[in-house]
Image 1 (cartoon, rainbow, N blue to C red):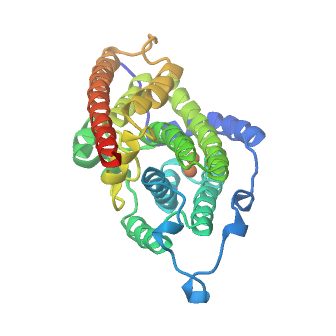
Image 2 (cartoon, rainbow, N blue to C red):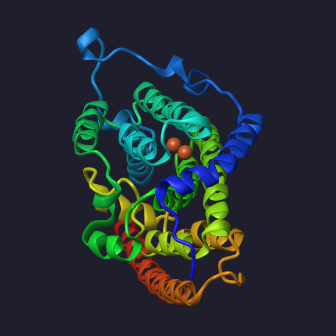
Image 3 (cartoon, rainbow, N blue to C red):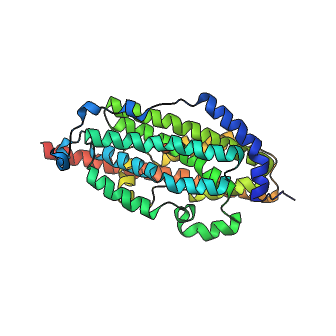
Length: 330
Ligand SMILES: [Fe+2]
Ligand SMILES: [Fe+2]
């Protein structure tokens, strides 16, 4: 009979792993200053202080870079919601509590530096950005809402959305934001933005490693239960920005132009983490765990097929657009 651990059991049993990983993180994390990544000399006042308000031609960013910047920044803006979820699941005691505070403080740098950059360089409309931030943060983020219609099914299978679901989700989500920030940096066509987003992506990678190690230790002490949580998350995964203004339109643009698409999701986010946990080579699952593993394998197989289909559609659409541009130019 596989061992089912309660939330309290998990917090207690994984506390030494949390402590070890907090120490590991503090040794390698680099302190950095958001103000060092912003070209302040490009800034000037807006109309309220006697200057000029935003006009679209002031921006050096193309539509793809704008969509990616806005999506990534609004995602970072919702930190209070993520803090709430993590704090609820991790408790505020011992190494867990320390991590919650430290991680929140590190994450806050991301929205600070991106907003400063965008406002100073006039990369996007700051008034629209503020209006979108108000909507997005007022809606907030909840893991249940992110799971959408499938939340009931998930709860039935997983029992509850607790610690294991949270660490599984943030492991994939931190890695997904790493990929998205890095590719957004390239799309901005500005070495300053690229450097800033590389800096943020490096943070996201260290965060991912912390959560991946906790979840991996969970897999060792409660293999079936952890695999159930991982499978729930992988098969229902949605980026945390779902629900922000223009999320679909921006998401499509980002996928179409390789900022974050299905292949990156599969090959740069899902597969490397599952490999690290040795999911498909371990022999400590019970019959129930084996069944979950088959469910996960079937999902990944389907995702691979969907990826190929998406890429064929994308190639056709891009070719059509290129032809249209050629016709307009001639
Ligand atoms: Fe972040
Ligand atoms: Fe992060």
